[in-house]
Image (cartoon, rainbow over all chains, first blue to last red; front, side):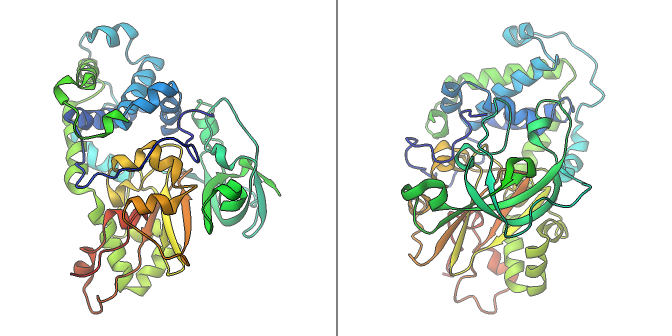
Amino acid sequence: MNGPQDLGGAMGFGPVAPETNEPLFHAPWEERALGLTLCAGALGRWSLDESRHARESLPPAVYYNASYYEIWIRALEVLLTRHDLISELELETGVAAAQSPDPRRLRPEAVPAALARGTPCDRPLDGAPRFAVGQRVRAKNAHPRTHTRLPRYLAGHTGVIETVHGGFVLPDANAHGLGERPQRLYTVVFDGREVWGEDGEPGLTISADLWEGYLDQA
Amino acid sequence: MPHDHPHHDNHLDPMDARVRALETILTRKGLVDPAAIDVIVETYAHKVGPRNGAAVVARAWTDPAFADWLARDATAAVGSMGFTGRQGEHVQAVFNTPQTHNVVVCTLCSCYPWTLLGLPPVWYKSPAYRSRVVIEPRAVLAEFGLDLPPECQVRVWDSTAELRYLVVPLRPAGTEGWSAERLATLVTRDSMVGTGIAQAPQ
């Protein structure tokens, strides 16, 4: 979706302003926000793709005024209510009746193994790749209302296949509960001139990792 | 991004109350164990961070067979050092050369190699970095104090899928004969994102 998250080439956000000796967290609530997000995700009711879609579906004015952990928390509230884990009333009042632990509740002793395992997204695929290394491809001029990982700044532009990867879960489907529908992934290299015309820095190349369905032969 | 700066007053932060309320509800409903949150925070505060990535880079500088493995199959190579897991399930290493400087971004969210670098800094997640580095990387790198020679080309890697990128910076001159452990002290987080280079020996 052409949401607030799709930032490549947007202007007006000012300097990057890296902080010297930046702390890992800027407030105690950020620690809890990280942990809550991971613990709630471990309940297995939604995918990382659905989480990303919930974040990018926040209104642009909210998204741009929030720190990243605030974005996470606001999206987490959406996911928890969408999947009936908490009610709007509970969220409003902060009051909930005590319940016995969910069977999938992440236990402290299970955290190290869960973090070390992660959630691999590669999947076996049948069939040969549609594109080969060195082939010219065009990213589709696509603007779905739904989740996608094709950035707007690359849509419609031509690049070259640099690496042919294996199959990966398709976020466009998985974010909406439509199954994993794995597709082959490619690293595609774009010349900065092709993407930005005269307005990009000279000598720039950009690559993105794009699913087969995002691409057409150029 | 008003919340991104360190000067805000936590006592007045409405997010503090909001997150507290959410944790209370989820705990009451048996969905979250607060002790698990403590372990997660502890992990990223003390166990998983840029030292992991620095160890990988320093080993690649000193061990050609490992560097070759890292280039071919970074997931397996870093996995052999125990660096596996969340936001590092699929890893690719990209090597700087005198001709090409690599820099990593996630324009669409905040994808970052947690297993090797820990949690991303605020600037990495900021709209300013995500919007600009794909169109004017030299201008962005200059804000980090990095001025690349004009003959050096910039390659930006937009992390749009589940591959997580580790930049292997150039080994600094004057470090001949150094051990991997000593070299690792020169490898900064920013040098592994591409917004910096490895430190020169003092």
